[in-house]
Length: 308
Length: 258
Image 1 (cartoon, one colour):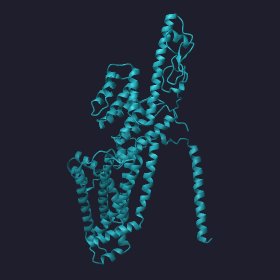
Image 2 (spheres, helix red, strand yellow):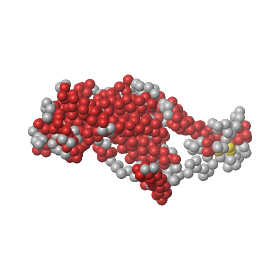
Image 3 (cartoon, chains in turn purple, brown):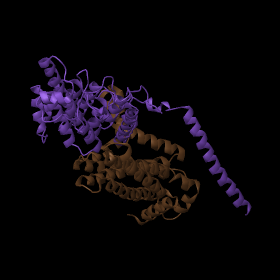
Image 4 (cartoon, one colour):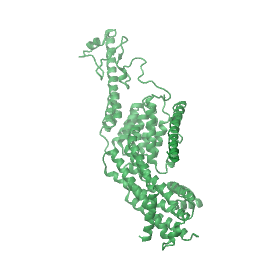
C-alpha cells in the first residue's frame, strides 16, 4: 500500500468513525431534550409574512404547512392531548397561502371542531376556517356541508346549520341531500335521525379510509345511544307500572313484549345494572358512545402534553 | 441565427455541460421521487398537489440558481482567463459574443427544464396512475418558468458585463427577490402620492415582474391559464430580455478590455 492509499484508508476510517460517534452523541442529546420544543413553536405566525417570504412559491409552502398541521394533529391525537394550541394558526396559514386547498378546510374543520381528545375543541375556529374557505371557493358545496356539520354536531345550532345546508344546496351541482338536511335542521327533526343522515353522507362522499371508518364508528355509537335511550325509557316505564325495577333484561323484555333481548351493533346483549341503568358490555368498542357507559368510564385518557 | 452567435452559444452550452451543471438533475430526481413516495404517508390528499408544486418550484429554483451562478461568470470568467481576447481577435463582434452567451445559457436551462419536466410527469403518473386533460396546464407553467429563465439570464449577463462575479450574483439574486414582490411594489405606488408615487411606479416597471409568471399554484388546482396571459407574458419576457441584453451589449461595447 503506497502513501496515498494509506492516507485514503485512514481518512475513510475517520469519516465512518466520526459519523458513527456524532450520531451516537446526537442520540444522547435528543434524550436530554425530550420532545424538543419544535412541536410547540411557530416561528412565523403571520400568514401574510409567510406568503411574502415564499417568493411566490406559496403553493408548495401551503402543502408544507398542511403537512405540518396533519403531523401536529396526528401527534397530539396519538397521545390523547388535551390541547392543540398550534392547530388553528397552522390551518390559518395554510388557508391563506393557498385559499383553494379545499382539503385543508374539510379535514381542518374535523380536526378543530370535536372536543379533545378527538379534536382541538375549537368549533368557532373551525367555523371561521370554513367561512374563509367558502369565501374563496363559493362553488364547492362540500364546504357548506362541512360548515353545517360543525354547527349541528358541535354547537347544536340548528338555525345556522340549516342556513349553511340551504346555501350549499343552491350551489350548482350540489348533492341533493343538502336540501333534505336543510329541511331537517329547520324543522328540528330528531337529533339521531339528523346525525345519522350526516354521518351517512360523510361515509358516502369520501373514498378516504380513515374518514369512512370514523363515520362508521359514529354511526355505531349513534345506534348505541339511541338503543340505550329507548331501553332506559322502558326501565322507567316498568318502574312506574310495577313500583320496582326489573330484576333482569329478560324480565324487561317480557314486560315490553320484545321477541328477544336487545343487542348492541356487535351482537352483545345490553346489560341492566341492579340500579336500573342500561349499560353496554364492551364500552371500549364504542369510542364515540355517550350513553350506556359504566360510571366514571373514559374511553380515552387525556394528557396536557405529548408523551415521549 | 448568425453563425458566430450559434458557435458561441453551442460552446457556452458545452462548457456548462462540462461544468457538470446537469448533475442537478440527480438531486431533482431524488427530491421528486422521495416526495412522491413519502408525502402520501405523512400528509392527507395532497400527493398530486405536492408533486406539481414541488416539481415546478424545483424546476424554477434550480433554474434560477443555475442561471445566476453561470450567468454571472460568463463574461468576467472569459476576461479573467484571457480567453475573451482570443475570441475577440477573430472576426467576432462584441454584441455577438454577448448574444451567443445568452443563447447558450438559455439553451442549457431549456434542456435542464426539459429533463426536469419529464421527471415531473413521471412522478405525476406514479401518484395518479393516469394523466388527465388538465395536466397539460403544467406545460404552460413550465413555459412561464422558461420565460422567467430568459429574463434572469439576460440580467445575469447584464451584471456580468460590468461587475465582479460576486456582486453580479448579489445584484441578480436581489432583482429576483424584488421581482417576486413586483405586484406589491405596484400596489405601494398606487397608495403613494407625489414624487414617491412616480419613483415607486418607475421602480415597479423597471424591475422584472416575476409574479406574473408564477402560475404554479393555479395550475396545481387545474385552473386554466388565459391565452391572453400567455401571449402577454411571452412578449414581456422577450422585450425585457432584449432590454437587458441591449444594456449588456452597450456596456460591453464601451468597456476598455486592455
